[in-house]
Image (cartoon, rainbow, N blue to C red; front, side, top):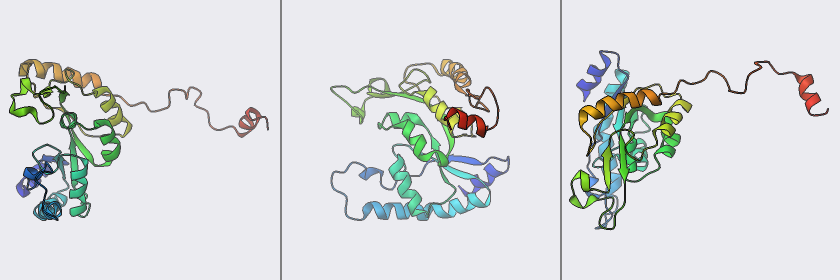
Length: 231
C-alpha cells in the first residue's frame, strides 16, 4: 500500500481506491452475541494497521478512498465513522461512493451523500436492484446472482436513481470522475460498456453560473425594496 501511494502520486493522481479489510466481518450478524469490547478492539487494530499507510499517502498528497463494501469492516456510514474516530479523523481517510452496495443493504444512498459529501472523493456508477421475495432476502440464500433478490445491474437497468445522485454531486461541487463499474447478472459486458459510457455522459450536469430567475442581473435597490414593502 505504501508503494501504491507513491505510484498514485507519480502521474499526479489525488485519490486512490481500496478496501479496508475485514477483522470483524465474520461477527457482523449479532448472533451469537459478541464479547464485550470486541468491536472497539477490532477498530482500534484496524486503525493501527492503517495509520502508517495513511501517513504515507498524506506525505504523497493522495487520499485513501475506502469502497464501503459488504465483506469489509467498512461497509456503511456507521462503520466508516467508527474507523474515522479510531484514526483521529485522519484527513486522508475518505470514501469511494458506490450506490449499488447501499441498495443491497438496503440504505438511503441519497442521504448518504448529504451526510458524507465532504469525504467523497471517488464515484462508481454501478446499478443494483433489490426485490424482496417470500423465500429469500438480503442474505441471498447462497443463490447465484440471477436468482438473488439483490442483484447488480447495468446502469439504468436497476433501482438506483442516478439523476438524483448526479444532481447531488453537482449541488456539492464534486470534482472527481464518475467511473463506470460494470457488473450485471444478465447483460453482456460489451453492451454494458457501450451503453454505460453514454449513460454517464447523459447524466453529467453542467452546473449553472447564476440563478434561473436572476434575469435582471441588477444589484440591490434599497429604495425599490422599501417601495415594495410600502415603507
